[in-house]
Amino acid sequence: MPDEEAFRTALARGEAAATAVLRKYSFQRNLRDVRHGPNGGVRNVIYHLAIYLGRTDLPPEGFQPQASEIAALEYFPPADVDRMLLRGELAPNMAFLWLTHARPLLALI
Image (cartoon, rainbow, N blue to C red):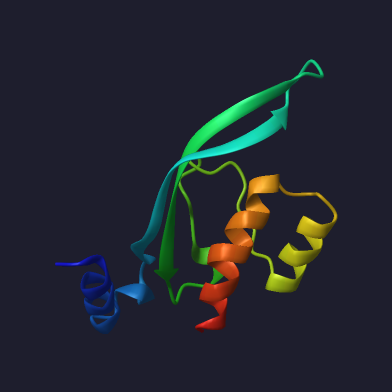
């Protein structure tokens, strides 16, 4: 069953009332980023990225991510993410992801 069909079936069964229902939206390989190293140098980082769409009816305080997987989890309104990007508070690759994936998805809601 394709991800979209399984996602919609789970929502129709009411699974979002007890958990987060997820489906893979996109997967990108070999993204590159240049970051400052701990001793003042720079390093090239290559990574893969999967983006999932999710739906839950749980309040944010009811969502308990696995501690070993996520060190910190916070929810931000879209305008706050825009401001953090403009102030350079997020990794440079986040601008690409926000503008090409997240912002267009929010417009669908």
